[in-house]
Image 1 (cartoon, helix red, strand yellow):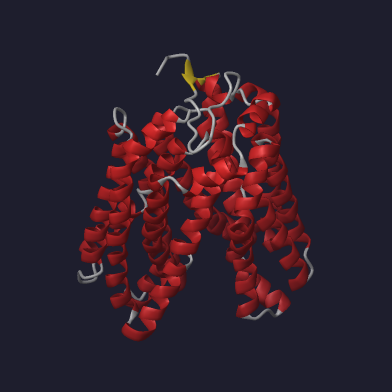
Image 2: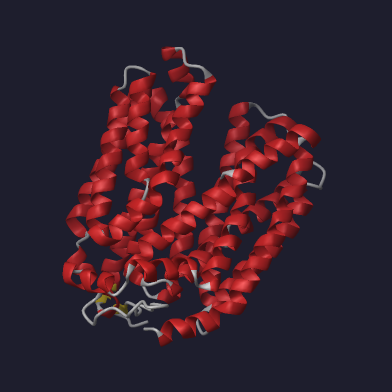
Length: 441
């Protein structure tokens, strides 16, 4: 890597996808300092995204008391945002690839900040639900479009690291939303908590709009039009769903997150039930493990990048190793007696369990054309939710009802066997798929 700039890697199409023009983003030189500024502002908006999403969970008791809400209604308020994200992430990401990622991000962030401010003004359940729906629409494509924007200004050799840090920031934002939301609600009231987070988001939107410009990223309208013109709808679908490595990576990523979702949702209950912690202390303990998961995503993403410098396929091999290691650690942790040793092993397990996120998104980013990176990131996000994060906690609950939560968590890590197999197959296909991509470029 040069000391003064970063060369953006070339667009590699497949099955009819044509390489982008020489004027496109892959041929630009982006100063290193500016690339990191883009990264920092994009991460900042991601934190705002998750804080706006999660703050309501911290004020549930206040809403329940003031509006006499049932737990079912509180659950609807908490669940509507991820539902909207799941429904709209792919179509809105597809539009962002065509409309322009920077403009799309500014629009999306403005929408969720206005909706967060609207939450502070809600007078009843229905008004709050409308505000939450608007937050979900604003946030639906941000995760995928933001990551695609980061990929566009850094070399492929850093994709796993950047993706891991990005995913880790989402976990940090979730924790901040709960912790900071609770503190703000105590000091300012629940309306004040929403207002403070909304105003912080508006400030970040302003900074992003002032400093991040598509022209400075080498992503001019003419370049983007040229890139997209080379990709027919059929070629786009083939790039997203016909490359063996990409398909196996989708499966490997989603099944591993089945375990992550299960543990992170049920770990507060586990601490409360078996360590007899109070609700607030169990939540605090769980927050530590959430942070370990996010930290592991960043650190292990960087490890995968280092292993894949000379041969990118090794990133997928590293991801496969992470699944095997997490399987061993988590299977052991939930079978150990309660105590310090179990907590240490469990901490190591959750540190490793989501290390696959960086390498898997990097593999998809490497093989799918840059022009549709937002769409590709949306597809992997959707599948991660449909096959992993959503069913994992549900299946764990079913097993818990029948056998007990401790037994359920002992067996959930077995899903890593499916993930490891899929990632091994992706690793075996990677070099051949990369060569075919070059041949079609």
